[in-house]
Length: 274
Image (cartoon, rainbow, N blue to C red):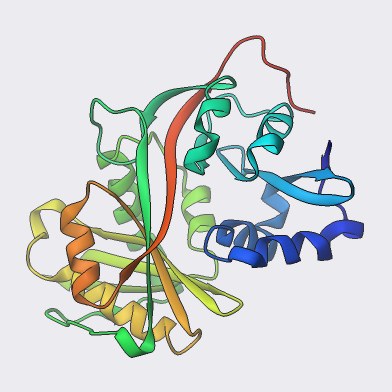
């Protein structure tokens, strides 16, 4: 087995590999389409066949997919010291020999690793619930959206985020929001790649929760995304029962996909990336 950077000569094979399960590999498609310049792609090949891959995005995120055998070889190339890690559950034992879990994604708990469930929806099952007055937010509202996104980061204790990273996060995104008293208090954003849309961010300021803002913004966003694609997916923390129930009410169902997410610290002595 060998590991090498993604090159034009194998890109068609890589696309075929990730399209076998577009839900599991959506972030690879997203990074290829929108964030290629900020992303390093590493591919594991055995007998000229792709068996897995690793993505290092923007110096902050590490995603690992593929068979277990390829995971160790791919992680030998990892260069990020404290990335936000997204892996399949089967990769956790080998991942822990390279990175020590520091804390989970989302609200802090005693657990250092969080589980994300994937939920999906198509047009037939969509049941929008509009309780507020969601509006599509254009580029002139990005500063206000960015302030909410910064609040989300602070609440989840995910560390500081720069204005540059906020603007990157919303590149080519469709965004809906709701207001109270002229203040933007909730937003939902999504993106479409090929024939699948992804709801990436849903957030409401704490003091405005329980009033239907998230339900309304998410419903409006999904309605628009279903005009662009056949299906929409969203990822939600397994222990976020409030969000899971809200998504179920508007038509999302679990797909059976699960991923582990956490902040990790590279273990001293492991092979450095190249």
